Length: 201
Figure 1 (cartoon, rainbow, N blue to C red):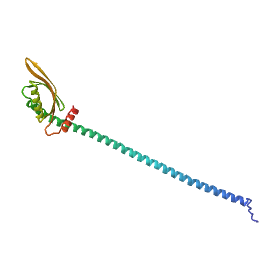
Figure 2: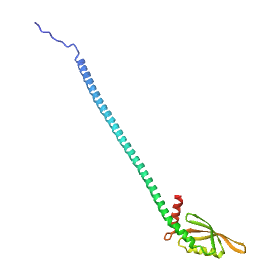
Figure 3: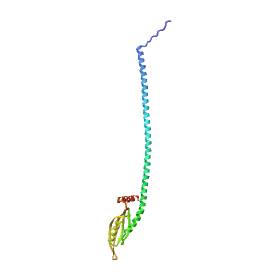
Figure 4: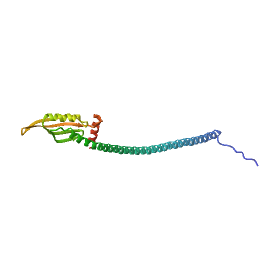
């Protein structure tokens, strides 16, 4: 039996072209897969970075809220502290005022000379206005000297004095101002305590 002879009818150039075409598509598919992998990895990394940043932002926002809450608590504590300090100062002033009132009226009596009678007394802070009647202008002068010599009074100033006559007797209506002071305190300290009293009222 005679063996059959196989004859390749395809041109060898066509076969080579087909091989190149297959290699090209193989390389193209490989490049596509690699590109897809790179893009996927980049996208995954991008999403991971966004998620991480969002987590950090959420953490910072929580911390800011906690700090804001602490700041509000500190402000409230400061308000409570200021209120307590104000109350303590008012209590101290009231305790001091008790003794000052006693000294005030003692001095008001001690400085009053004979022949002088008071008709009204008005006090505003550390200032006092007195209306009175004196047997003579000299009695008013003596009264002002006594006030100036007092440890608890200072700076007497005559506002007005009017001489009158009734039943052949002469007398003088007068109004004068003076300041109350605390022995051992400067005028600035007295002014500050007077200002604090006005504010507390």
